[in-house]
Image (cartoon, rainbow, N blue to C red; front, top):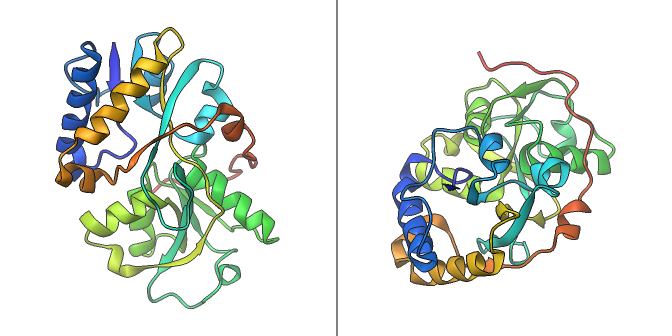
Amino acid sequence: MIAMLGMYDMPALQGANDRFWQLIRANLDYGPDQLTRNLDCWEIWQSPDLLFAQTCGMPYRTRLHDQVALIGTPDYGLPDCPPGYYQSILVVHTDANGETLADFAASTFAYNDSVSQSGWSGPMTHLRAANLSCGSLLETGGHAASAQAVAEGKADMAGLDALTWMMLQEHATFTDRLRVIAKTTPTPGLPYITAKTQDTGKLSQAVHAAIDALSPSDRDLLHLKGLVSIDAASYLAIPTPPAPKQRIQVP
């Protein structure tokens, strides 16, 4: 069996994620001893041995929805979002000229991955709704890397997961060089998933109990407020923009 919590697992949070998994495992009375951190996400998400993992809404709707089962969606209590929902935060450099999204629309946009809801799909849908489009693209491989690219002047704007933005403000040293220029419409957050052969009801109960049993410090670190049920149709209804036409690797 495989368990993975790689979506929000920056070094400062790994201990809390490990303790969260141990609580889930204890409630289940089975499962792997340790979280997996050395395998590709797609390999884990599509494995028949998957017991517990977190994925992003875009991979779920575009490739995974008929291969995995939903356990539930964690609620992080994000501002301006319904329980279990999140949004993309669009950031620019603190010293950059411009006060509106239109001022940065034709500039270099940094995104983590072309199958990311918050890093790619949400921002592109938001720009399109405003009759705007981005200029050149910089694929970074991670939200923190996208934010740092803007902080270091390698890109002009980046799209970040709202929770990652909060965590970077708490644990990174470069966020004082960034400011928020826009926020997208909230969409369903990153769901917990399992293989279709697993008991989703039992897993959901185990996660609920584990969140309740977390220490206050770990709950604060992970920003976990609870677990909500968001149906597959809500994820599948989110629009998917065209894939990037140009990719530039980070120097």
